[in-house]
Image (cartoon, rainbow, N blue to C red):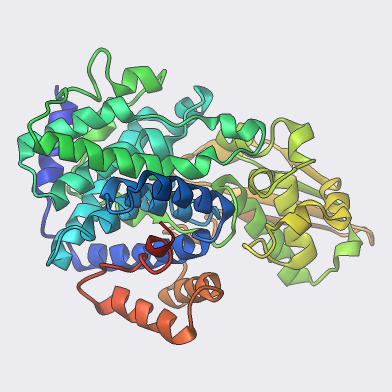
Length: 445
């Protein structure tokens, strides 16, 4: 069976969408804009701008997408598709918004259908490749699988034919890359991954539009993506129940500024702090469970996780996240800062944190990402909290009001309150989103 062709044909024809899917797309667009605008100020983002400026490539949508995607992934607060363990919006919206700058009078309906199709493509490829398999081989699904979604989004915005779209998808398969080696020393390359996926997806679609041909069996073929990037793929999930529901509806948003595998344990700790009102000095010991797939990301190597040397390393350190949650009652962008990485107080609290595995929490992973935290206090009390669905999951979502509060908090240093309100109104009720990131990223290129 040709799963690649069936999936691409469905996505190429995707147009009319339910109202709740359109609303979810706008919701995730606002979330993306908040993290991208704040991330545009990161040092890693500036390096990308300087490179693009040096190449005099600021007018090219491929390089705009690279800048957008890199900025939006800098603060680790972008959305996540649970079953695929993949950051979708940072790739797909970067692709769509970059191309919009070159496509006058693009209707909102086409923008939304292109985004939904991109989410669908990347999520289904990530689920088929299986997150644990990708991680065990050293691949980052956001980049390796995201490029397929970017190619679909670009193809739909460029109004490619179904055959051209299939070629774009096939070309994208030769651009699938993204190494987890950034974990070894807190390098910036993970932040680059969604930008590269968006850039390559646009390039694949542009090549296909000019007649360049790609393989039509890029996913399931003998030398295709699934066989090269996973030891035990599930090809049948690529096309199962197409159209019955949409993967964009199964995408989570992050309230905390760190790896998705740390969100549930942080929620459990914060719930205990709020419920029992103890002070940091009363904490004797903390034990948190971490899902197996996240173990090599946020637990190992332990010496490094207990001694982060940069914000990137802190964003992937479970002991650091637990410590700041206990000390500050939050684990947002204001807590993941260089001064806290160097703080003796934070490091003392980190030494009280123990991380364990729990097979009972693995039963429904990756569809569910549960967590548990136990805190022992100096007065002898032992407190425990189980989190079934971390805050931000579709089963435990941020409301629109909560998402707007996150957006305003992130963009506060960058825009006036009046401009923030205008952007919120434009995303929720507008029909054109051209130029939303230009004032924050485009002027820096």
